[in-house]
Image 1 (cartoon, one colour):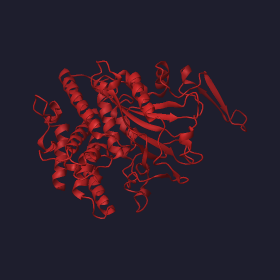
Image 2 (cartoon, rainbow, N blue to C red):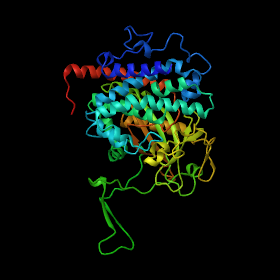
Image 3 (cartoon, one colour):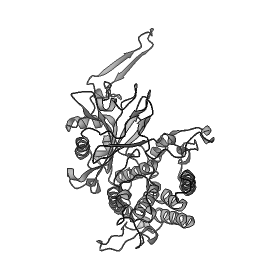
Image 4 (cartoon, rainbow, N blue to C red):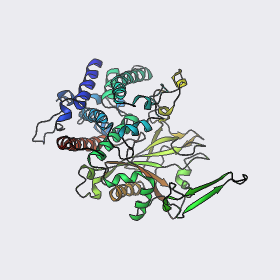
Length: 465
């Protein structure tokens, strides 16, 4: 079974990289379609597949941990995830030397983003392996099956033989649901979408100043900034021209956004230790209006998928160092917490036994570790209002962008109790749970649309600038 799964991975990847799937329309299997599917049989769920009609149906679509779901690797959702994953993975090589919406090329974007990320336990930044196409191809073809096999063995040992090695291997290799794989999937979709649509206006929101400026114009509650030409910062004891710094404000054409420090609101503060940073909520929204940017998007086309409370650690400067508490988007109840910090541990010493965990806890943290402060079980106030805010903000500012990650602040400012800090258009879920059926249906529709646009660009000999 391991060999069969490995063969499926290579067949599917090369089918979309340089085979028939690269040069034909992407037509997923659908009983309502009048056209025959172009998906190879090994990426279609067999007629005997289980998953949508059994007792695990809700868990399959909602859970963020596939290995906890019996028979997930036999469900239709698994096969849907697999073909979207393999298509997008192959598309990275199409994007490689082409322009990116925030860099000169997709290559430069992944090199920069991988500089502080390593496969846990290796200590080697992934940026070392994506400097050219052959190297990146070697990474995909070797590291993917090797790491998937190690992960399946690790889980089997961790669960004392209760997990299935073959099922876990299939999930890791074909339908990975770890935070890194979801992040890269979202990044590749964003890269393809921006490229083939000639970088729609909404992608300008990636620029922090443009976001604040446009947000203010559209009556979106963005974080407040100072409207002055520049500031001078002096050290109180230095002299002789030392210890003095000048910052020209973005409002005056400078490179710096000058803001007062925002403080955590009461609800957030009571769940944090002393000296914790500003701790935000990461909410992901998707816009079906991005499927066809030539058409007008309605606010109903935007849906909030997930919410995570990033509870900052004691002494940290930002909530990038935090415990990630999942939040139920329907009720606002805070669920279990986890981390992804082990993906950011660099240095060869991380290879030593016991230094770096292979995987983090599966949302079993209930208390903030810095002070043993209870967090799970609390209810985020006005969760529906928060989700409505990001949905309407997505619609106002960037309806032509498929997926947006919002950093939402519950602040101590009575005049602005909720505000948006910034947006991330190549976003990650920070291990939050979400309805995978809604997400994958959207991505598969998007992949079909992008493939048609790519084929059209091929026929027209389009040159991307």
